[in-house]
Image (cartoon, rainbow, N blue to C red):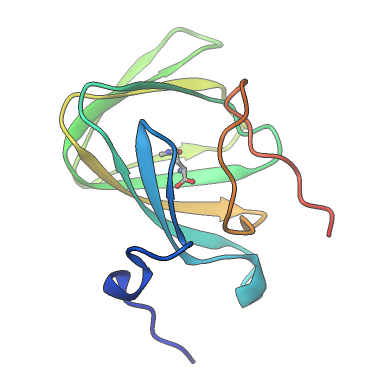
Length: 128
Ligand code: 9YT
């Protein structure tokens, strides 16, 4: 087994800053677990368009407050600590943070570790 500490990821290339958010990538594809896990901070006052067409993602909020608007139905889902949202239909959405939000993000298939969003809020499919 292995133990991964956030402090060992900070300041390395496993810490990916996309402006609206900074994603600390704890395990990813090379760990061969079939999923990846990030500890991500969504910065206060931001709105991010996200549409993971190639990945399923579950997001557990452990700090902060904000909301998710699902584009297909226009529903707004308040998110705060101890709330999990599950993008089980590759849902296109807008993520808005009222305060800094700390999220535990699980991706299937796993991220390679270096992804940032493209202009449509998508991470590319990894065929390697
Ligand atoms: C919650 C969310 O999807 N934020 C965007 C960043 C992404 N989850 C990541 O790579 O950690």
